[in-house]
Amino acid sequence: MTEVWSRRLCIAAAAALVPGTACVDASPPSTREAAVEHVLAHGTILRWALRTDPSQEYLVYVSTRAARGAPILVTVHGVSRNVEEHAALFAPYAEEHGVVLVAPFFAPERNEGYQRLSDEGTAERADLVLDAIVGEVAAATGADGSRFRLFGFSGGAQFAHRYALAHPQRVIRVAIGAAGWYTFPDSRTPYPYGLGASPERGNLRFDPGRFLRVPIAVFVGEGDTTGGENFRRDELVDAQQGTTRRERGQRWVEAMNQAARRRGLAPPASYQEVAGIEHSFRQFMTDGDLGRRVFDALFGSSRPAGANP
Image 1 (tube, rainbow, N blue to C red):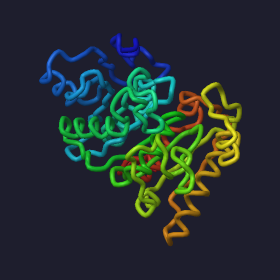
Image 2: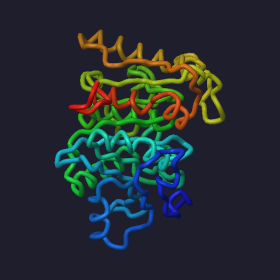
Image 3: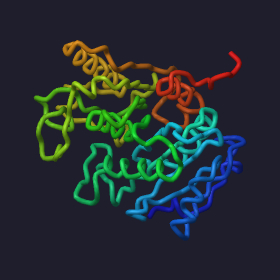
Image 4: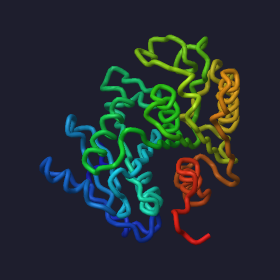
């Protein structure tokens, strides 16, 4: 397992990330009972491993305001695997809103194709792994795991929108930040570029009549135009989607909304560009107010009930 899990972290010491937030206990639990006790602790970011697969790890933050039946928000990292940063930067919003925050860790050696819901022949598919994680968190914390809200950034945004296409019954709302490319609602184009049959699609099933009812918000930085080494470029994706994350996000949102209109449904997707932001999760959170934007999209308002206007 990577060194991201090898140390005990304290967010209070990392004030540049999240001033005033509680410690992160990234030490492995010694027993199942200890794990449950740790997860039930509120106000602390904790590392946990799946009971059915101890090598599959994730972070959990249970708000001190979370009551039984609290909503779950899942945030998914990109290919840099900055799972701790996701948990740290979203924890204050989860605390404010009484949310249980889950940040899965998709390791490269076992979930190489997690962005495409592909197992790459190495492990169980990442979407099925997430289902197991959410179920375990719900059982341990009393949160509502029947349906949840989902966010992902970059590679995590690829995962999040494809999860919503394949499992619309599991998500209430979805928000994604700066995906490199998308699966379009087109059954004539092979998966993962579209919904059509392909070896990579496997046994994934898609029902446009259901996934086009899921509200989904797309956020991209206005300065996110340079691509980078992990930005997919080939003749097919460039012709279908464009050559920048901005263009690809715009085209995908329009394709989703057009597909919904053809079925007599309300357009489910929205698109926002944020000035001054490049392809950086941390910059988007600290300078682009991404946390508030995501909570507005997923919960309707980032201001808790009873707060002063």
